[in-house]
Image (cartoon, rainbow, N blue to C red):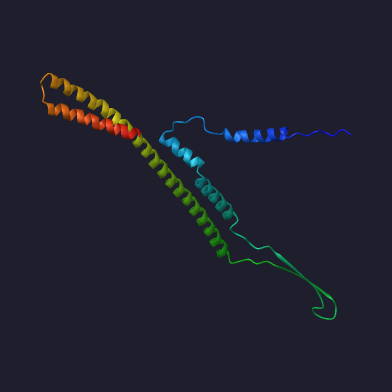
Length: 195
């Protein structure tokens, strides 16, 4: 009898093909965003904001179901109730609260909905504040990195100019040494920023 031969190759291949996409999902490029785009992106993708939106939706649904009048109850009794003969008793009951109860239930649900909307606004404001703060810090750090490069250029020109003035005997050695020292300080600061 010829038995089929099974190999592990298809299963191994199947497992490898399932795992490969997991390792290749890395971001390939970066996008440049201005502050407004960064805020919009954060508001769109933040899970806290999504949860607050769901909370608002939930409160709206609960507000529509705030007035809850209980269902009508049907009571049925059979037996000897009023005499010797067998009796059948059917009764209906409906519990209805005073109308102000339903009014206040509706007002409470509306207040909860408004509260969840305000909480959403607070969450959005807080996230916007954090994004602005982070963005401004990032812009400041970029400018802080560019400043020593510009200063290096300026102080380098000043050092060369004071060297020429010293060589032509228009100034003394102190001015030349001061200019070179300032240029070296800026170069050191630039090296520290690069590290």
